[in-house]
Image (cartoon, rainbow, N blue to C red; front, side, top):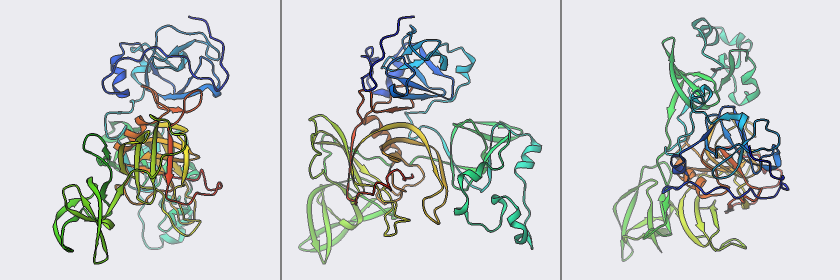
Length: 484
């Protein structure tokens, strides 16, 4: 075991890592190229540090159970870890007692399934279909299922004593009055909590027991599959701006599956087919108005109605002190679009769904305008809450994908629970289609290295700049109150 280096001051950068393993396809392909060893995390999660010192100020990331991190074989002495530390191939120190490099170790073989970064979504997801669905700590017996999942026969006179029943068995109640804390009120050694209809779980694996199919969630809970509906990630994806792909770009949005295209000659407008919702249409930048309706010209010389589309255009000006090759992200709340740039060169464009806007301060969930840097990133993280206003329903979404926090609880993240991109939908966060969120996750800093589940800026690691325009800045008291 090599000796411990002197601990740095908290804002010092990590030591120069060994050369990264070769790769042709970015971070996702780096792990298979490394011959080993791999450190498999066998605890719930473990921190990754800039130095081999158990100090919160030096924490640069973390890995969850089942994460496989390419490491150097030789242990390093340090502080706060009795077994010594492993140095990750691409930087960061992991305490050796939090896992194993022995792939035959039963703890490694029984660990959680790592997120699938090659799929649209990192995990399978399912939506709860009934109020009161139980989450168990372990698989129940037949008698326990009957006790925890009773069939309630309702008839005349039931309303009179419904207040004596648990919330999920009542005929009449306001779901907005149910708080997250109440969902665990019946918990015991077997029952962990109950779910509200519309909550989502992330699935580690599926299995059969006592002639019933079950989900094991990524949180280690057990859920009856027959209470859930599987959901899939929307396949929409923005446009990489290479070769002949350039701004401005438009997408039809809203509830209609198609929108009309037109030919315009001498102020005469004739329909010339349709184009589908969320299919990118490249524009020339030319506009015209006929009978009070504005039209935008496409590169193939057709025209589309401006009211039918969201248009992504280059930002009016770059932010101050922008480095020539600095990566940054521009979000325009007025057009519900996002542009990723390198310096002043746009490289990616897509649609977003920002926070709903109203004139009532209690129900106004608008996303803030301003400039920030990505503070932390998570391949997935759970978002839940009771709702911030009267009438808001409680929500819980396990393992929201590709989350990039920039201020308080405001984040850019993937959304698999709706497909209305281009329309304001959220409680304040910037919703992205899953494939867009994944692209931006790996485009932005701080980097989440192979096997890690999340990373923080600081300790010499700077986050990517996020510039949001098109809305009134929120008061400081509102920042931090966002939901998905």
